[in-house]
Structures are given as C-alpha cells and as structure tokens.
Image (cartoon, rainbow, N blue to C red; front, top):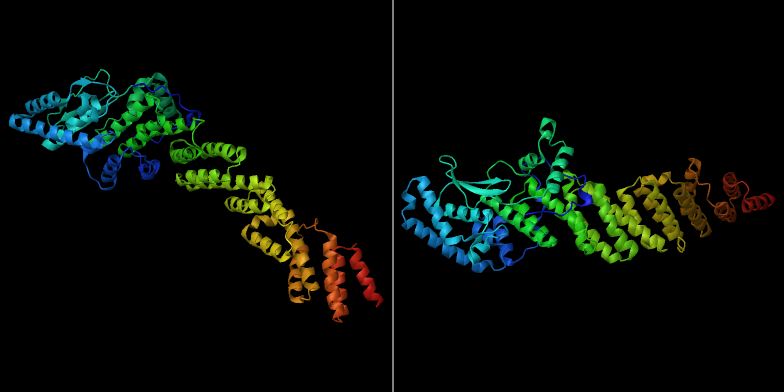
Length: 524
C-alpha cells in the first residue's frame, strides 16, 4: 500500500511524542469527533469503549455496510468450524499438531484468496483475506478455543504465535511477501528526518539507514492485542480509502483507529490526514473550523499555536473580512473552540474572534456593535497597547450621539475598573476627565450641588495627580466652574463662588467665561 500524498506545509516542522503509547487518547480523539457509518458501528464502539465489552467479531465487522447479516453468517460458520475441530480430535493432540490441524480447518472453511486491500467482512462474502483480517479470524477462534496466542506486528506483516510462552508456534496466515503496508521513500524519509530534528533519533544511531530507522520507530517490537488489531484494521481501511481519493473517509477511519491503537504511527497518520484536509480550499468553513480545533490537539507533537492561529486567520479572512458573514463566522469560532483542549490556544483563538469582529464593526461605523467585541478581546489581552488604543477610539465614537452624560460617566468608570491598563492611555484619561467636567457642570446647573461636588473632586483629582488630560476642551472646564460659581452666587455665597472661579482659572487661566464671571462678582 503506497501513501504518496505530499505532507502539507503545515507539517514541515511537526512531529509526535516519543515512540510508544500515547497518553493523550482522551484528547486527540473525542467520542463526539466520530462520525459513525451505521447504528451497528456506533453501538459496537459504545459497548467496547464505554462498556468494556469485548465482542471482537462485531468490532471487526463494524465498518461493513451490512454488519448484522455478516455477523450471523460468521457466527454460524465459526460455530461449525469449532464443532469440526472438536470432533476431529485436534484438541487432544500435542500443541504443535493441534495448532496445525486447527489452522488447516479454519483456512479451508474461510480463506480462498489473498488480497492486499481487504476488510474483515470480505472473508465471509468472498473468502478474500489479508494478513490483518486472517490474523483477526484466527485470534477470534483461538479465543473461543482458549488457545493462548500473541499477535506480532512487523513492518510489512502481522501474524500469530500460538502458545507464546512455551512452544512459540508460528501461525502464518498469509504469505508475507507483501504484508500489511508499504510506504514510499519520501514518506519514510520525512518520518525519520522529523525524528532526527526532534532529537528522538540521535548519536550514532542516526547514522543508520532510513529503512532501518523507519522500521524501528514506526513499528514497535511489542506484542499487540486483538483490541489493537482492531485499530490496525481501521488504519488499513483509512489508507485504502485514501488510495481511492476518499480523504474525508480516510480521516474518519483513522480517528477510529486511534481509539483502539493510540500509538505513534496512528497519531502521525491522524495528524497528516487532519492537515491534508486543511489543504482543501473547497472545504466547508465549519468543517474547516472543526479540523483547526482538532489539529491544535497535536501541540505536543509539534503543532504550534502560531500554526493554529494561521489556519483560523484564513477562516477569518474568507468568512468575515471577505464575505462579511458574521453568523457563519460565529459558528466557525464555536466549532473551533469546542474542539480545542489547550486553554491557551483557546484564548488565542477567542482573541482573534473578538478583535476581528470588533474591527469589522468599527470599520463599518458601528461603534456600539464594536464595543463589546473589543471589550472581550481586551479581557483576554488587557495590556495590548494597539487594542487599547482602538478600544478608546471606539468608546469615544460610541458616545457621539449619547445625550445623557451620566451614562458616559458610568460606562467609562466601568471600563476603568475593568481594565487598569486604560489609565495609561491619555486619550482615555481625557475622555474620563471631560465626562467628569460635564457631569460636574450639569449637576450644578440643575441645582444638585452634592453630585456636582462629587464630580468636581473627581475631575480635580485627575488634574492634580499630573494625569495628562491636556486635550480636554478649556471651554467645557470654564463652563462647569462657571455653573458652580453661579449656583453659589445665587445662594449668596460670594466667597464660595469666587473660590470656584479661582480654581477654574488655575486650570484654564485664559478662559474668557471665567474671567468675565469673576469681574462681574468683584464688581458687584
């Protein structure tokens, strides 16, 4: 079996964890990631993965389009074979002769023609088999006969050893001249070079040939279980589908393979097929978003946050910036996020989503719409200077049509409490100071001295602290202090009125309104 697909650009600097069993089976593939081909497959997987049920016959038939009928035929034929084995006296013979006779009975009843591309259900339909499917058949029957066995996996072959702790009787189910899989030179070289780059292969060992190193690290030397052989069966099915240009179908089978055999090989193939699908420019955006989230799980294998962000940016450019489809972009974001396991990557994706939505609304002049998105983005990156600047600009623009200044004050105070970094933004401070000045003047004009004093003191605290509020309008400052002076003047408190005028003139010494008001009071 050839795998000629070029490794996508995304994978040039990528690899997997150290050889051996993966400890991320619960994160690389989730139950909700699986698209089952039939109710039979779903229920079989559920019973196996969730209920710890070990009905291997069903597991090997689960990828069939007619599994129920084939399961009945298999059960019938297996029972017939067992009766023949029992009646033949084979079980009373010495182990080597016993195994030989059982082997012949099974082979004669089930197996007709070796075929490299083969699924287990084809045995009962046509008698065609390969080393994986035939090994599965023998293992299932050995289990029923309580014959101990071990399954061995080599680079191009899978086979059984009966009585592995004593006689070690080799059970060759096929002629191993073709075997399980073969890979072209490019695939092998990429695999080995990535291991070298990751320092997994190093020292004098790195001088070995590509074939030797590939065989050593791509395949383990340990026995594999029948449970794991289910994974190889699905892995094969995925590669067969890939060779028939069914990349999506291949990907689905590799996810299932990983659940049963979470080794470096299944992880590597799963990563490649995930990335390969992202190379498809015609991919549905929501499906692409799901894949972006799923490939982010391979962070320990070399997938970086920058790669994931780059893929999400492509969705952003197409769906939001180019087509302005905010609803579809929301669905893409949610689909990406629900498939990510690393909270840091999730935050990076969320930042892009909120910032880009805010930016689009801002560019459309919808500052009210932009504000909550920028706020959420700032919650994720509160010290982002560029974001802080555009957020303050957005705030200012969103207040243009607001006639109730107290709403502006409340809003600015809320954001000041929420984002301490805004206190370092002079434009924000000027907005805040101006809102205080206006509220100060408005309340004195309405006769509410208590609130007027509150906001006067808030404004003066900002001014006296040295905060740069130089862009604030001198006329607004003059108007506020003038209103306060008039209030006290009408109350007959001339000294208080003069004090406020003097305070205002210290802040805006050239203000005509304050100078005039002071002359009038002095003249009186």
